Image 1 (cartoon, protein in one colour):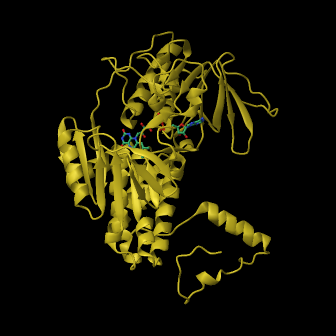
Image 2 (cartoon, rainbow, N blue to C red):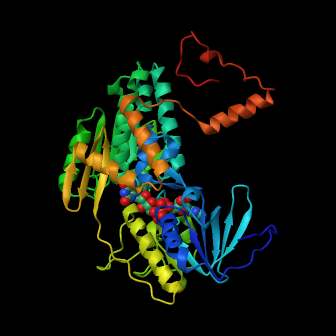
Image 3 (cartoon, protein in one colour):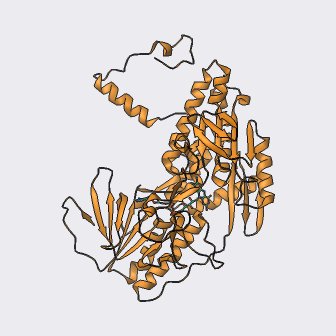
Length: 464
Ligand SMILES: Cc1cc2nc3c(=O)[nH]c(=O)nc-3n(C[C@H](O)[C@H](O)[C@H](O)COP(=O)(O)OP(=O)(O)OC[C@H]3O[C@@H](n4cnc5c(N)ncnc54)[C@H](O)[C@@H]3O)c2cc1C
């Protein structure tokens, strides 16, 4: 791994495998490959390059947002489960396929050049913000930072609503819109709904009736991924909750700051979350390789790029054909199995063998609805309610790498059974701004805005 600022070059190992992206696909691939190469291939160097130094358990992100889980407990530090593989926390900006070099930059703008013999691409996906004009005004829900930002925003809305005297403005502050009724959108809706119920006690001037959740789904029904019986169940559970509206067969045509346009109607909302599809990581778009309709990398059934046999791809960024010719869905359960299969294929190739096609039959799908309710279709069996919720939790707990983090998760879940969620709001951008301002003022806090003095009547007006 060379630093283009002139870092000392190391003796090149015989075979260098570089993996881009430390998520379900990339991080798990490295784990499996390390295991396979540990005894037989000491001449192989594995390098994992990823933007963040942790692996995110996305199915637990909802609970991190609602505070059931501490934020960092839905992620696992990558270094904690690597043995001999090198890890570089950096963002890959460019890949020179001719010279076989990955160019990445670190947070301090340090530039790295990482040569490879075999390259595995697993940079995942991003929320599709190209479909609906104004998507930049909506929150996304994909990364750890998204959960933090959304959580802080919701708490901030409640703080404002608590002291708001204008009823119309209060309603707007307390209207939460989710654009997209797929698995992620619906799980988020369910979890946020439960979160709002549990924090109500802290906000005596917010009536539960004032809080409104609206989900817009362009298709005929929500949860297109799951069986109709479970869709009906999920709809029934959610519709029974106060303030929940599920609007199907309607498309959001535009998003503005604090408003969505649906057909001829405009709905004002203090919080808008976009969860209407994904696109492959923008890194993929920069590569002169064959792409599918949505920009995903076309690979063969062994996950190899047809035009570049030394390049492989898996997970959300890749279109991997299943035996019936259709690409596998973009799900963690597939990325995990693809990782294992690809590690085996790479190991075989290192020994002069051939890679094997990836074949996997989906085992089922699960989704949480909050309030200890979920739905699941597992190995052909349909589960609902508490049992499904328990199965889902137990399954994802088992998927968390390492016992330390698993224990953290169990402790958080246990605490959440007995105590109300934390409503501490940590607005990192604002805190940093305040610290800088106070430091500039010689350590003294800035001037107190008269509107915000204790004991005086509040007003909904923004401070001048
Ligand atoms: C909220 C949420 C809940 C979900 N729940 C489920 C579920 O319950 N069940 C299920 O099966 N699937 C679920 N999914 C889908 C699942 O998370 C993805 O299918 C899976 O993560 C794909 O794995 P991946 O390795 O391709 O990408 P990811 O896991 O997203 O990993 C990509 C990694 O690459 C890194 N990266 C990206 N770009 C770069 C770059 N340029 N340079 C360096 N590193 C980069 C990222 O930081 C990340 O670490 C959920 C997704 C979300 C958003």
